[in-house]
Image 1 (cartoon, rainbow, N blue to C red):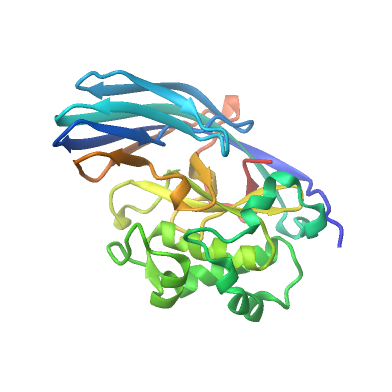
Image 2: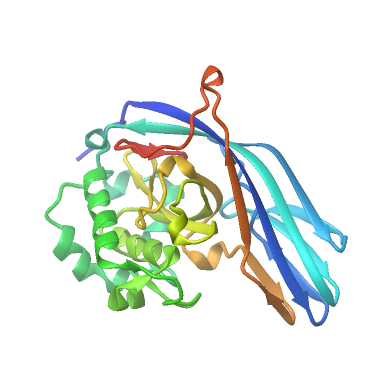
Length: 297
């Protein structure tokens, strides 16, 4: 089956967010942060600022594999507070799901191929039997991918404190509980078994229910279907148009929001949001939609 480009509509949102990260350093330590909003064709960073207290030299570099923006610094013993403030505008490409049809493997673009293979937390080669038993009778395309998304949402319970940073898709599918990264790993492993390139995205999510707790970092999924990457959130806790991209990788190992080298103790991050609404400029608030949503090609 040849793929058909999906004719689409669009929407635009503008969201400001602030991240506060606090640490206690017991010796000099180096940090790599992935907290800057990504700069892509469909996501523009209008303004941003970094405040580090105490003031130490810092720099932002773009790593070459996935284009993630790395904030790098070295801190001395004592408290360390890092604040990032960004104002981001995102254009959403939307299409009727039925028009988003599958892509044969021999027509996949080269840049999508690394996301077909198993990775540290997404053991696609070990969930093949499950994937084809549950979804193998469906026609390749958006509806099949969305069926995987809904299946994971129905099989895994969102419960904070039931997994760790080392929990893999296999463990989540066995335990049937976890947090957003576990949902994303599980969906990605199944999709790759079904021959879809699928990647792990970190960001922040405007619009999640307050009953789920204070705002936090969020993880979601992109699957390559047809001619672009389409957004999926297997947790279902936020509208797809409320997602801001920070990091992209094969799984969580590629996009940790903070990597510390030294004797460091940290506390939970604090996240705050504000969404703009300006109909005259075509800016709308994030809202749920039944359309397929994409922010990357």
